[in-house]
Structure formats: C-alpha cells, structure tokens
Image (tube, rainbow, N blue to C red; front, side, top):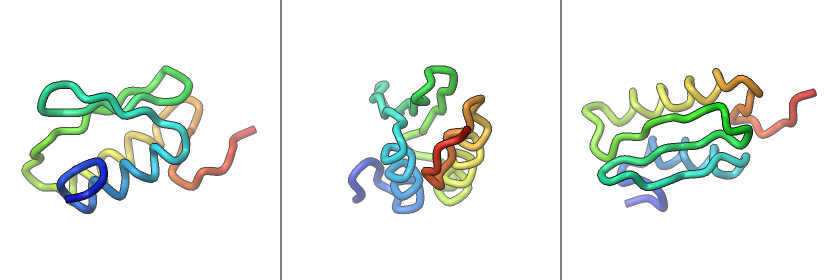
Length: 77
C-alpha cells in the first residue's frame, strides 16, 4: 500500500503532483486533486478498474491545467 493510494502506479502520479503543489482531498471512497491555481480538479477513484490506465489519465489531465502545472516541476513563465 502506498502513501496516498493502494495502487503503486496511481500513488506515484499523486505523489509527483502533490510535490509540485496540487492538493489531495478525501471525498468518501475517492479523492479530488486540486490544482494550485484553483482552476483544475481531477477525480481519483479509490478502486479503478485498470490502475495503470487510471494513472496515465490522471497525469494527462494534470498536463491540461490552464496554468500548466505539469509533472516536471518547472515553473512556467
């Protein structure tokens, strides 16, 4: 079991996002990742059908944030 999620692949993506400023809020059996700028919100299911695909979708949605808070951690100008 990981620090944030039971599945390693999802836990790794969540950990990277939290390190660059995203906030994780518990909502029953799922979580919401909130963007630092307040514009983005990503739903994280507690028991996804395919954890590896869910991790890729979470990372893809994070890259689509309006202020581009990506997983590389570099500030945008």
